[in-house]
Amino acid sequence: MTDHAPAPPTGPFDAERSAEIVAGSFAGTPDARLRAVLTSLVRHAHAFVKDVGLTPGEWAAGIRFLTETGHASDATRQEFVLLSDVLGVSSVVETLGNPADDGSTESTVEGPFHLVPSPRRATGDSIDEREAADGEPCLVTGRVVDTAGAPVAGALVDVWQADEEGRYDVQRPGDVPDRNLRGLFTADEDGRFRFRTVVPRHYAIPTDGPVGRLLAATGRHPHRAAHIHLQVRSPGIRTLTTHLFVAGSPHLDSDAVFGVKAGLIREFTTVDDPALAAELGIANPFRHADFPITVRRGPTRTCRRRADR
Ligand code: BEZ
Ligand code: FE
Image (cartoon, rainbow, N blue to C red; front, side, top):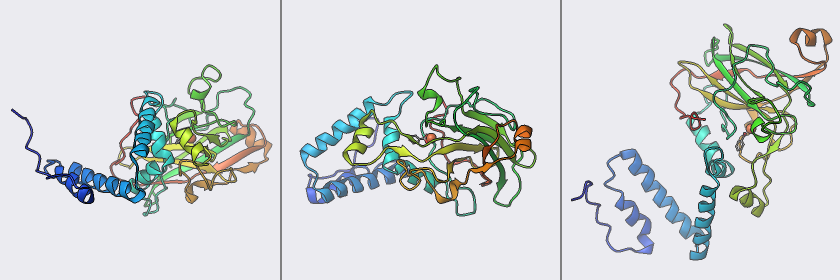
């Protein structure tokens, strides 16, 4: 007794018609979207094998690589996401799923360092809790508006970043306060937000696993341009996950995960104004970046893949 419909007959295997034969085996898939995705996947996979003339030895090596990628993945490290990132798949999925053709701010990859929840902080607070950070003090300001220009009062602005040496808090446990350089801010009535921090440095994505070996074997560097992550959430708007990139940072033109978009790069200008610095509670001189954000009204389409952490 079987609990599923009989598979459509595929006939004998034939290398020339392989994609057609295998795709046909999925013709009875009840879910139309699953059927379409699997059919296309089979077509492209078979075309790839034929295009490069993949040998049995190379296929075995590929399987070994994917197996190691799985073994390097757990609750805190996702080597498969990293693989998707360095192949640019994360970036193209993110970009096509969140088009910015209506004047909204471009989105980019979330990355593996977003911890939920970020600590709640008040407007103007510092996300850097270290007493005497060595880096350059920095003020980030912005305003969240919708595509019609109306402020999104009360929008949640979730930020996280690496420090002046390119390290996230989770990469130096015990060394810095828990959840340092992270913050959840609430935009005011006019959609404005503001926080103090340190100018982040560019950094290398993890290279101690199979993805690192892939980059080394192909002569690619593992670096990401300096950036601050922002995620903007509010009822009735599509969640925006993006970065603020530091103009002049190394690797803006060769980001290892293809996250850079021209519209996300901002000057971090130097401000030398002791009175203003005192008013803001920041050391003088300091760097300032302004990042106006435009979001779309409508339901969020992205699924939060790390919301459980
Ligand atoms: C990040 O920006 O945090 C990141 C994104 C993709 C891979 C590794 C790190
Ligand atoms: Fe990052």
